[in-house]
Image 1: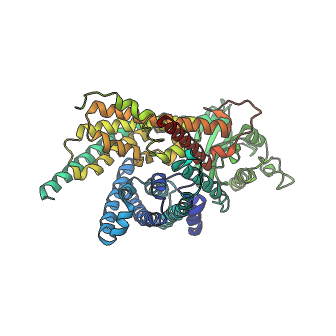
Image 2: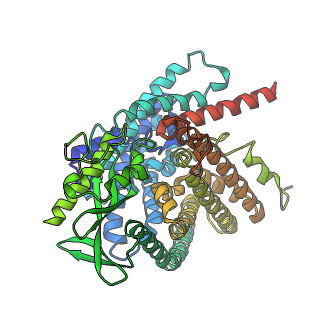
Image 3: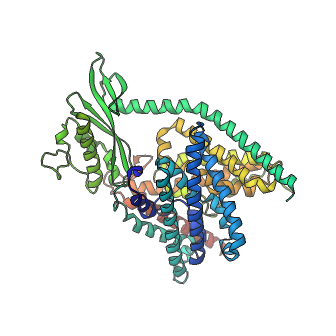
Length: 196
Length: 177
Length: 201
């Protein structure tokens, strides 16, 4: 069980073995939307790391210290999504003020972090796996770093694809999916590397 | 933004959340007994599959291990069913194992697993699980791991097979003590 | 002038502006549960239910909601319907509920639903909003079923668990593993692009 494993294994499992993008298929909208440039992808990746780690920790506290004691488990979905939405707003304000260039690069994708399933999923998974607070923290760092790593790698490949001769019907999105499929195949090789 | 607008926004958001919370509480009240009923039916179905001649199934707990005692139509205890958790290739495998009074295996059913589809997922197949029937604890080894073993591993899914076999054996050994 | 009921709202999203193949929205559940036709059908029905519920509610309340809090309000509405769907499926079929797992509550962040609420339901009347929700939901369901049929048939040799290729078929395993999802959808979009391109010429 994940909650009996040590912290290093939890991190690696979330980071590459069960990669959030390629194995669990979460956060794909922004993945395909923004990964045309390495710079924007890196920015998005870092934003996701920040939001995921904070939002997961807050959600964990909300769940175990607010919802469970009052038997309000059925409000889990509503409570988590509100936590994340308000957190994204907060981050948006900061980036807009401090890093206007980055804000321009994100375009419409920053508000879309709210509907980035990777973040809500990490919060849910942490609860589903019955992780402790510290484990949950490491887990969320692992998941979001995995997101960041893959989106940057993928953007690198896509930048090259732009200049390659591809059958016309596959231009754009289709070839991106096939590339992602091949990357997913490579990541599948990590499965079974760590026994969890 | 005017103060009035902010206050209006807050009130609307508050109202909507309140209505949503109330609605969900009602839905929860209605569905909860049904969800539990479904769970019970499912449990019973699996128990019945392991012990077709069992009539009464009673949940018990001893030494921090919960199990189900199975009684036949004469009210006699004919066996026990345990829940076993074990680590497979893709995550943990949850299964139920039924044993008779002499700790011979009556049947094994996989409840949940996340093994590779098409390979490790074959641990749920009848062909693999039926091998366990009638075996004693010391016979539950993979043939390739131990000369005493009587279980064939699934081709291409040794780790998943071993996880099931070792998980059951270690658990039963612990319980028997 | 806007019509009271316009059936274009229903027809358009099913094929021409299909939420999946045209707008590239709602990809996560699409890829994650499309390994089995049964689970996909469950997911499709859940999405239709949530879409209709949220589009209807958003359309009803659109006049009372100040624009600066509309997104959080919409999200709460959607989350409510998702939780209802979550518990109903658990009460109806624990097996499908377990297979859909975390992807069921995650319908909340399915961009299709918030997208339709924001782009359509918040600006249109109730009837049109419901039509739009039905069309979009059916478009999504068709897409996910199509992918699931291809993946389950090739990868497992079955549809709804029934063998389709006879016993001699060796499953093309990669199709039901994660990479297969990406490959199938890549090829499907390529086909759709090809068809659209030819029509333009």
